[in-house]
Amino acid sequence: MPYMHSTKENIFETISAFLKNKAHRFTPSGPTIGEIGDRATGIRDAFIRRGVPADEPVCLCVEERPLLLAAMLASMAGAPPFIFPHAFQPQVLGEVREARPFRLILTDRAVEPPEGTEVIRMDACRPGPGDRRLEFVRPPGRAFAYLFTGGSTGKPRIWSKTPANLLCEAINLARAFGIRKTDLLLSTVPPQHIYGLLGSVLLPFVASAQVLHRTCTFPQEILSTLQNEAATVLVGVPIHYRALRSEGLQRFSLRLALSSAAPLDDADAAFFLDKTGLAITEIYGSTETGGIAMRPYGPGHDTWTPFACIDWKIRADRLAVRSDFISPDLPCDAEGFYVTADRVAKAQGNRFRLLGRTDRIVKVAGKRVDLEEVRERIRRIPGVRDAYVAAVPLRGARQAQIATLVATDLSIRELRAAIRSMDESYGHPRRVRTAKSIPVLP
Image (cartoon, rainbow, N blue to C red):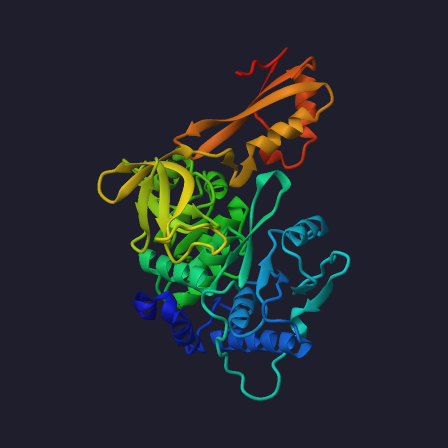
């Protein structure tokens, strides 16, 4: 298969080879690769006709996987880079625009644009006359996608990604998990997030596999689709594996189950293994670093095996990584290593064990939560004199529950009611205690 020999230096040559398979259907009843290529040409030509600079970011409000793929191909061929908002509500678009300004929105649906922006409909993007070939002119190391990191209590963070970042990572996943053209992928993750984008758009593309058109999120919907469509690969997240704890769960046609974005619960993974005979494989990484390591659920599953293309070392108890997947926004040393905030310990063989974080950012329900910001929000509640917020580990070093000690004369009930009025429920402390004061060391 062509992806076995690709590198960031010849990534466009590899992608051009995939596009030659024009008759292959990207989704079982959807467009062919040839039709997606034509759509990409139309997007490119539409922006060229408008005179939009090749590096001016455009907000992409699209959920259709074939259209997302077309937009990414278009960006590599001369269209602008695209911003991937995590949702399309007006408030979210406004927040994303503050983090990464844009004046144009490309969409296939009705959206309420922020003031001062213009909407371009996807169906208005038609190829111009003449040659419809896609020539990839964007340098592989220049940003073509800006991805939202879910998170830290209301502060959007955008990470730039290059064609080399995302395509090399998709090719690595295809290699690591043996994805082949006979595979049919079912995703419970929307493609606006990096895991969904990689797992349900770029991965099936580089492997010449197929992906189901819709994102399945409800338990019965997932089960019936697995049964009726004979999907072989499940791209899921922990909350959906929890929802699948049902007597109706079977292996069906599955050969691989993936999980990422948050820690997988032991009981949920054990139930899935018992019902299907498949061990869920977790992927560890982040939007900014890309995938770093994996581990299948089972005995001794507390250690992580880095992907074969990842260089890693331990610096002052922290994991340092070097790969083609790392966002150009991250500070890397002279050797190309980025030092993460994750504390690790060397394990047997080429493995490591996660020990926790060195910063005050934790993941709760797959979302990044800044504990200092939670603390400041609690301190602004009328009647609160001071507050301390901590993350209490629930399982291993990757799953946490937020706890707070508050100096106040409010009752626990009053305090909880005030906390519930804060934005983003995933950032609410689940353990709440009060005191007259909180001693602080000098």
